[in-house]
Length: 115
Image 1 (cartoon, rainbow, N blue to C red):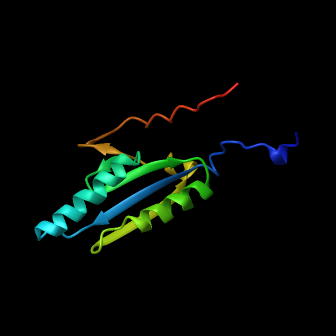
Image 2: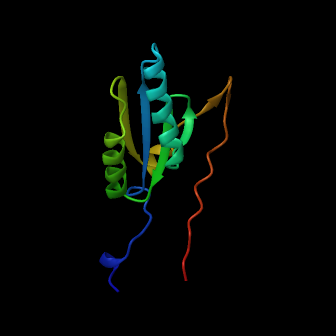
């Protein structure tokens, strides 16, 4: 098998997606729509980083683009939603603070190996 046909988990091909949103919660229906969107993200395996910021690891840009289409199908009717895609190399440059101290490095997701 040539190198071109092999799939590698390169830090420049693997993507992280961030979904950041500011949804109105003035009326009962707006609160319901915002909660439905948050719960949909969690049900789909997204991890809550902050209350309005969710993230997900994707094995490729193509997978990230598929998630982008899924997000666009499940958007609430109002509010603002931003989706940011960064490479794994860019993601590992992120500095996280908890209180006034730096948080430790985030563990990488386990890679499944099939024999």
